[in-house]
Length: 72
Image 1 (cartoon, helix red, strand yellow):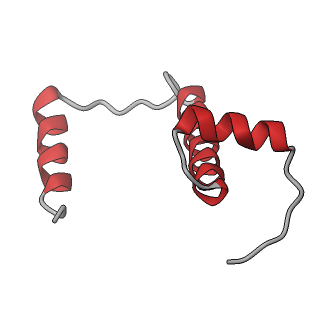
Image 2: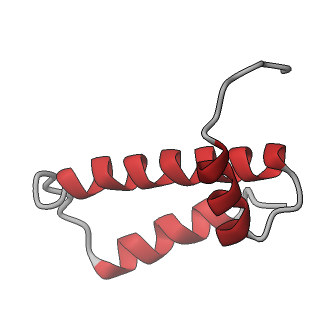
């Protein structure tokens, strides 16, 4: 999707430097993905200790095996 936005030049240069990106587009995409990942992780952390799973270690291993069976 093509969008025109006004980005602070110093911010985009710093983002490109830190991410080792060659293009502004790549730096923006990586930066957006990182923000999303961090926010989702914060949301998961806020749930810590609030869910009663009552799983045994064997049940957890079985769930992980079942999840990996779907991977290519």
